[in-house]
Length: 184
Length: 195
Image (cartoon, rainbow over all chains, first blue to last red; front, side):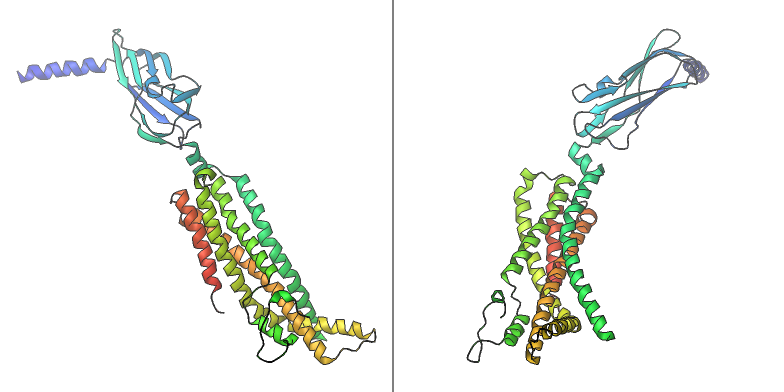
């Protein structure tokens, strides 16, 4: 009985390895995700099985509704005719978040067919909840504010330079007079 | 005679104060002339309002939400800065007057020599009075300007350090309140030091 079970398991394992096995990763290419700033999503689909996967469709529309994200470049779904065993393909899409706050970046769905024509589905890696900074928060933390700092320096100049120069002018004059008087 | 803006003084002896007495009394008084007081208040108001620019543009504090806080903090800071200007000026005036004695004496002697060439003889007492008056005037002006420069520089330096380093993890509103008021308090406190 045990021998029979082992044989069945072995046959199943061999049969599984003869199918394409798709693993998909989903990742941000940005360090910071902010409202109205471009967000690049990167997908890599690996076929770690022994057979070619055909009609591979990556679809992440559910994760980025059009009311919350605008597609700037590329597409939220991509189709690959086939992914040979042991190879991988990648796909990228540029989005613009229209909202701010915590967002649940759900996995993308990947559907494909095995050599027998059966439909298979898997999901990409899970990115969990990530914050999308509001425009105000982003500007506060990351914007260089060069013009603002230059204007601030310009505003500080009169309250520092004018009193200093007026003091220095009198100071230099009387120090010079005192030095001259000391010499003579 | 002496500028009436230095204020009126009562004398123990009968009759008006001599020029020397008035100068000495003014020297030891913390009172500032009205023109200097206005200068101090305007400077204090302008420099106290400067952090508002930083917090509005860089920390993104909205004017309509934080307007009242901006106004109150600016007024408190203006009061403390004016106090600091007055205290530092008072402390510096005496030291500057001592340093300027030689230079002012040389200048007055030159003026007297020029006057003598017009055949007007100037007595020693008048020379001494002129030196004393000029010395006080120069010391007053230099102390005023240096006090404004020193206190402004210290206030702006402390505000930037506090808001962008020490309190950077606080909420922007708390950051503004803490950095501006603390800087003004430190400047005012340091101005009360007796050295």
